[in-house]
Length: 180
Image 1 (cartoon, helix red, strand yellow):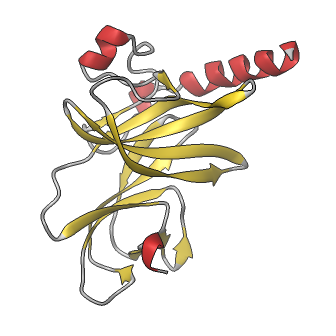
Image 2 (cartoon, helix red, strand yellow; image 1 turned 180 degrees about the vertical axis):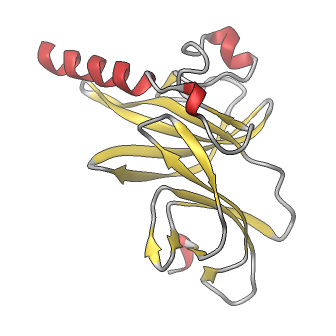
């Protein structure tokens, strides 16, 4: 058990050591390493990087999410409503030691307000015809389709550097996992 805890601690340190100066994309993206782990006062001010959660803190509600695997490691996209607006968190998943797994926020993406005819889709987008589970996109809803091709904005999760990178929308299509 001690070796397992040591491995989890080592992975947490490596995952938190992202270089914030290399952050790219939108200024709405918070990079791992940009702030110390969130404390109750940090959470209240909108700093979530490093937040360890099983259940969400007061004032934050889950809007859904997706479990994803990048390079053989499990992560979660957690869509949340916070006092400062809607976000998607990239969470690493740590064993709970006999309890449910614990999630640690590695990157936080502020989602711009969605128009009535838009939706946020996670882990179900193709880029150039191939599924890329790291992509999150805002799509325009279209009647009688299961694959959305009108993409307003898209980001790719970068787990190694703890950030979301803004990516070009050309060649992206997303499927609603609830309609397949």
